[in-house]
Image (tube, rainbow, N blue to C red; front, side, top):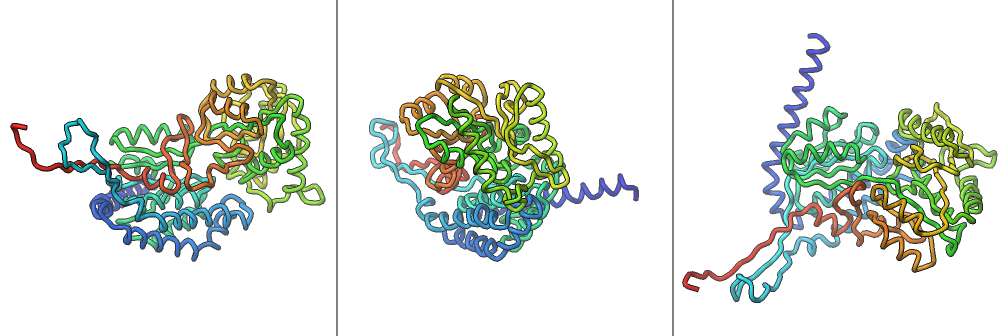
Length: 462
């Protein structure tokens, strides 16, 4: 058999396996839809036990894929998933309870009628994981998928192979394949999965790929949840604690080496405060990311995921310099380790590539403003980011920015705190995504709110 024939045979076998599992889940979705809270909580408890049992494996896999510091996965990925499971276990009974409503007087509904909203699963959910948080952003969405009474076909991201293999092991040990199943592979596999007449797609990734996902979902009129990103701005005025603000921005920018959709993409700071801000920012970096010998501490932050993304971010810096920007900070590139040292760009033209694309790396453009109108006009001209960070003690300044801009969420005087509060809905708007999850919001996102009216039998004449 030739290599071409062998590849074709392998692809056909993979397609057959996909269709087999999909058929199982499509049949089982009716049982999942009608499952009670006890059954769903038992599934979530099994997942919790598996996450705990494989916690050290998660740390090792994330270090292998992204060079994440050993303590980071335990705090940011494993504990986040466990927290989401505990939230669902504590509240699932009340989330699932039908909502009884009083019918509106004067409408066609007769006296004595009853109205209610009842929650049921959407059906078979196709879940795509990203590469930047390849563990958390598969298992965290899986929690509301299960809680709402769905089945799930999961595709971890192939750019994080060690984590993908671990997720396949965890899910395989925890669930029957008619409940939750995993398929590992690349773009060809993703395209094959998107051809299925799925009920709902949950995708975390880039806006560019999201357009492909939406087009495929539209073929079957499937609903979608899109968790994307955007150029999240940080805006700093003269009323805030500048050193504290610089530390918050630096932490957010270098968390996972800036490879996070909530990273502060760029900063706007009052003109007269720029140099002081940069000084505080670089001091934070030296104190937290470098050794006493002045070397970048490889154990303090993650690496770039691969050489392609390293080259992409380096190209942003080179383009900005060509256009007249200047560099503050180390700005060194270690191609052999896929690392870029923390870099600050000053005097960046707004038409530079680094100001057009989401950076997703440890490079921070610092721009200046004199009036809130300058910022509002710029932000209104671009896409709506996933997050906005406002550092100010001036309530009027904060309110003006909220009124004149739009974003998925906002944290004032901090970084990404709106993401960590489970009572708040998390998600984007427009180019940064659609749909909401976390806590009760995730349960409702992955549920169909079914309207039901029950009235006494009535016969004409009325």
